[in-house]
Image 1 (tube, rainbow, N blue to C red):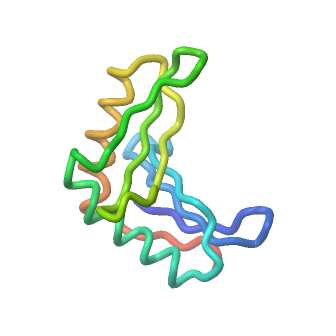
Image 2: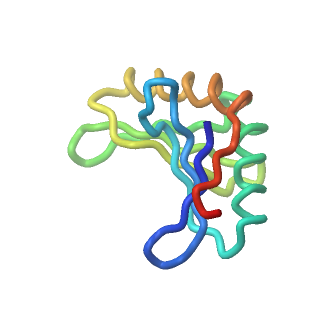
Length: 108
């Protein structure tokens, strides 16, 4: 599911949560809820193209990934994983969960 929430600065954000209740992708902050929902739609669409994911290695050796839109703008990022293999599993999980993810709005 996608969870919409407000951060401490009052901006709207979303996170994609897997069936095990762990967040697998988080967004940047958006000024409006409508823009946040557009971000969710972009993740649902773009997550189906594996070429739009980029796995990166941090200085500490851990791995994470970002999902970019076709215009190369980052629309979501993952948590840190111990290995690149773990990050690859996270990419697959985003692709699976995003295409059928319901939206839960906690800002109402």
